[in-house]
Image (cartoon, rainbow, N blue to C red):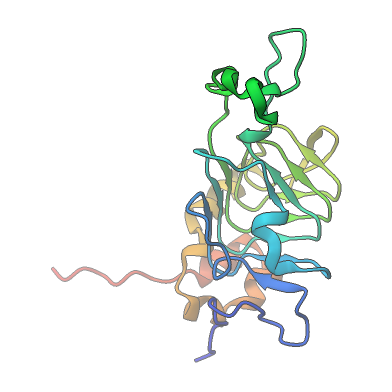
Length: 218
């Protein structure tokens, strides 16, 4: 039986330290990353948590699914980036200290959009930026340098600033079938047996490759 890749190894390609699996790296309780999702950066892929997740003061979480591919410079802006906009100035005076800090209540309770959630098997092109509270569906593709300001449907392809839906990778019927198959939840050993189908097969072939549940005894 083919042996699956090890999801606990930080650098799955020993001769390419620019590629790092994120699950064994992240330490913040506000960040959740599924197995095999990776970040590619020639400078320091291991610094993703501090260099690419910005203004993350909580309590909102960043949740990234399994088997996601993140190109160099992909950034997630969290809700801490928000400023008040209901007065003449948007400047965050209380953060500068001095007597200004007496007015810190002006920065509490700013509106938030909740957690930022990325599904499974999502591909982010180089330099994409995701704004707070966005939800990105399974199997989506985010074009390079896109600014994602709104939710992305399952298997949608988006691009631009602000990003807009360019096309769907599959028909609605096939998307429903893919979501039901949820291949990212298959046992790693079973995935290993069907890598070629996953990368180049049809939805029908993927369905044929799905694990078969044992029949219950009468």
